[in-house]
Picture 1: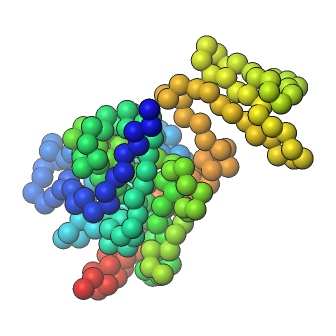
Picture 2: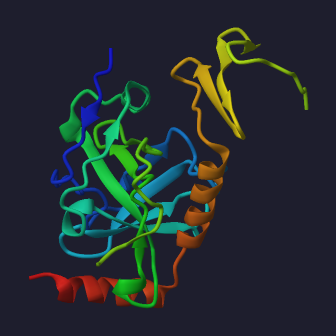
Length: 150
Length: 78
């Protein structure tokens, strides 16, 4: 009954939003559940901020002023491997763990050392259907504000 | 707000398919079992509030903050 999916954080599938896409071609990511704190915002796009897609902006298509800085976990938390339940797998239509892109929401500080990542509630993106959700993990050892560098 | 008194082992039914059962009462801790369809998300209220606050702190950093973070991440890489 419990076929939880182990999501491989090393999957490098941050291919959205690369240079050269026009406005019409911007891939829309739809949040199946709005992010807590932003109940009205469901449509986002992912924009790369560096060459290898480590740092990206999750930008609202409904509110041009709203964006979140996000990162893939592998550069900073190589052991991070969120486990989610069947409900999330069903909700995002995940059929293969390799299709899931894991993004951590960053709270930018003045320096890298003061910047934190939300490990408790990663944003999981089904890169095939472009449906996403910020999932609260069932792991009390994780924090919403983990320093990006130790 | 509807207020009900329940003993351990007793339940409350919400709608057609959600059952909340009081499992154990010990001191000031109450253990609650929730039987709900998968489509109904169940979270601790304070955790959702913490996440909302965290998201609001994270939202829309300044261009300067983004630029300095991007630069710091570049220099950190091997």
